[in-house]
Length: 93
Image (cartoon, rainbow, N blue to C red; front, side, top):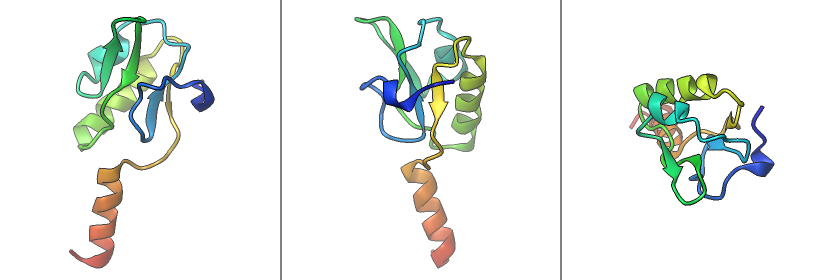
């Protein structure tokens, strides 16, 4: 299980992150190429963009499930886009 206390500083703020257990296997980048990138200098993946569409959310969940060392976490925080959408629905705008 991923540890948010050990997540890479490269991760953008939001629900998904990659921690220091990443073995650079490319699974997450294959499953969710719009959301995960490789740190070429140090050889690990990180979240460079939080999911902003239902497809990206599905792909990011698939990436988390595909990770052989469980280095991808989701701490449950909503992305800015999801929060804005809920605000709009609550106010009817």
